Length: 336
Image 1 (cartoon, rainbow, N blue to C red):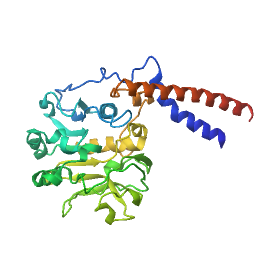
Image 2 (cartoon, one colour):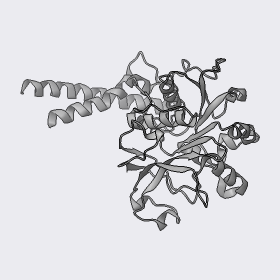
Image 3 (cartoon, rainbow, N blue to C red):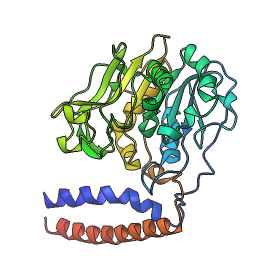
């Protein structure tokens, strides 16, 4: 048992050490293609919009996480992903011809989508049935301050995070079962720690909504008056929405911790959802989403000299620990 534990620990830290390699700059984002379009109408275009720099290292890595999804989508033949950064494309015409649009960014009152003129620009795409997908903070809209916005986002996304009503704790969500839905194909029950939002705002008469991820949070995390009314209740953390306009939407509350994209079930769920929202057939075994461990620690946002130094120090400490583990592992093998 001890040997197995050592091997698991060794594997869990090795991927982080790759970023400490002098030949790898984890903050180099120059190789990621941005707003590169296609003229081939046979390809299914999916536009991915990553938010601006946010939070500390390893959290809210919107650019790096979106880059991973970009590479995952390229593994499905006939799909052409397009990526934009900093919350909105430099040229909004990039949305033209898209079958689905994905937003992964800070939300709330500063949500890039609600800035002047942008919802009006997106409305024709929604009306045409283009998929609308929001991940993590991007599911938060200030509907508590604006009844018109609340009504609109409910028709676009099916539900949303509302400040003072919903709650956003960090907790270990154990997904024990999954519904029979194209988005869950090839996804196995899993458990992971993230900032899983719950107690979302829903329409008074929900229609077309399928609860994709559900788990029961610790009651101590129920931090709003409304959330406290439901002790022990299983909560919804991701949902699919078949809109009245014929489009498909998906809301996903995880994605705070960048390391979770290393979980195959976590990322396959999102890739499946993007394909489904674009009205593509999701393979019976789920979308292909092979990940090179090196890619998990590329394209990170640079978050200051002090932060970078601390990250470097941590990685060097891990490197030292791995050397110790390798030595101990070798000794254990000799003693078999």
